[in-house]
Image (cartoon, rainbow over all chains, first blue to last red; front, top):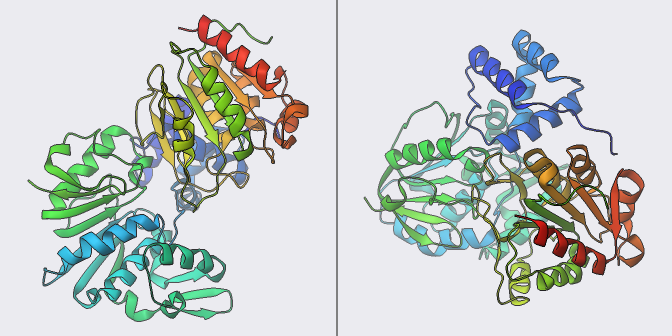
Length: 276
Length: 196
């Protein structure tokens, strides 16, 4: 239990991330160092690499090692209706405003396996807005994108999601939103019809549309301040005037240079609105 | 007592929900002029809204307890509480990073994660204290603290409501200082008066 875990120095991590960037075009250099260091050493433990040099060598040589690395190094933990109070704000304060748009364009940036996207689709459906919504859901990890497209979740977590749903103000039968099959819950197809899942890298890719709301919750916590600032610029460029920006409940615009371009819609749930 | 405790620049404290009385005692007995920042990690249930920060704040009018936002800078004379449902890590520039990755030993926030990350940054300028709790979270973290030259302290298991957590540390961590709650209070007061 107390055996020292795989260790990696700053220089070794720099070298590894540099090799990953030059070989595969994924730039992790502005990811949060503390978190990246921890995930790489965990990866080394579970995949059985004794030294950082070994792993760097294999990453360079073997695409399949990189694919596995990419899958494990990005954080893919998510749930439906995570932070129910946040969804209450979306329900009560944001959707009534979005209802005035003929077409509602939504971007979930860093959607992981789609749980929060499906939650949003349920809210839109209950508000009668799903049919005229276009939801773009993107993630850096191609494995997540493929998983999200399938819309299949493990059945054993649905009980907890149901509790989140009720706390968020949901009044329907939550089980009516999915079909149970063996140990799986399959999200109803009509809820997924207007969702387009695709790969997008917030570090290197550009703005691709104009949205009425962008949700990027608990994604930028894995970035350093410099990259966070750049991504907020990307979001600002991708929002219509008075478009909404939703972050994770412990994320802040205070450390960015665009904080004056946004007004606060919900201080606790970190919902903002572009005003300039 | 292990280590030379004149240069401590951060104190981390970890425990399960049952450690609250000891944490409150520690906060109340801190000198009003304390400088060294304190980071507290307490296990809590995940999807139940938590009053913990309120409870801690009500305990002490003069000291404010903060649940930090991501990338907030660690300030002198501040007491921080790891937010519910996130791991709390520390960057080299002494800012916090939050992390929503998998629970470690069924815990998020995990004491190990915070202790290990603090140890990497503060090395011998860190003192870490492990209180009462029911699993083995904190043991690996304390080992890392010692490995990097910091001071590791555990609550005496015989004084703990749930002894498993400090007991695991006593069995596995070399150079561990074992103290009663009163001893911990005195020890921290001494660190504070010797600190910066």
